[in-house]
Image (cartoon, rainbow, N blue to C red; front, side, top):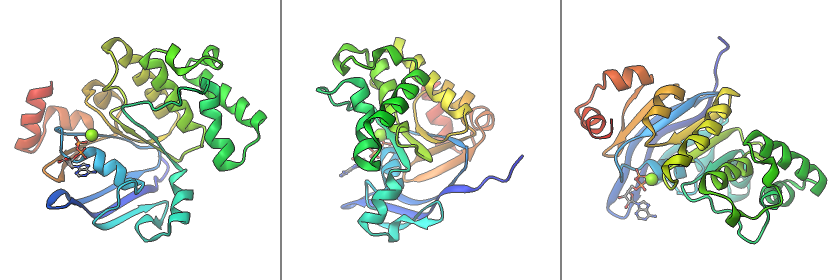
Length: 247
Ligand code: ADP
Ligand code: MG
């Protein structure tokens, strides 16, 4: 085993919305190549936590350290550069409807990284191949199924060569028969060594793919454990109740 480095480190992170204390004291580390599955009840603060990792939400206090740089101490310009290294995939795929699939994927590498159209095209096609959609390059989002659109959204995020991929319930908006194809793409990515933080209700994915499961409730990460440990011997009553409901 090689030594794993922390890519993301969170120290005493708190996030309030007015009087609503959503994240109360989060301390966590994500190591290089690790897959974290973040689970917990609705309203627990999972999305808020993900958004705090790349400062889409400004933490109320505490530190977010990414690749040894304290994001919470950077200017907006410096922040933008680091944000590019964190790919994000949401429940809603948010593809641009008036642009073809390949154009959707080429946009950010060309605009943000100054990549040539030709290079972005080659890269985009390679990524579409990776998610099994090379033949859809010139079609438009509306002609694709939800599962296909989400695979494009993953390819689009990968086109920026992120160091980390953050997923916020990427399969929750999909019809059941399309969930598997998206999870498969995510599993392939995990196997290639991508560092991933995945908010999900897919307990099968968490069991099979996560290196660690984090269980969040009431503003805290209540448990961090290897999946076989978490799913067979959850330590807190909160997690036991949650699992009794979802399993
Ligand atoms: P989860 O993703 O675990 O379901 P969220 O992070 O979406 O939870 O929400 C946690 C809490 O934070 C909820 O009470 C929600 O109403 C509140 N919240 C989230 N975003 C905002 C916001 N932009 N403004 C005010 N309250 C918010
Ligand atoms: Mg959420």
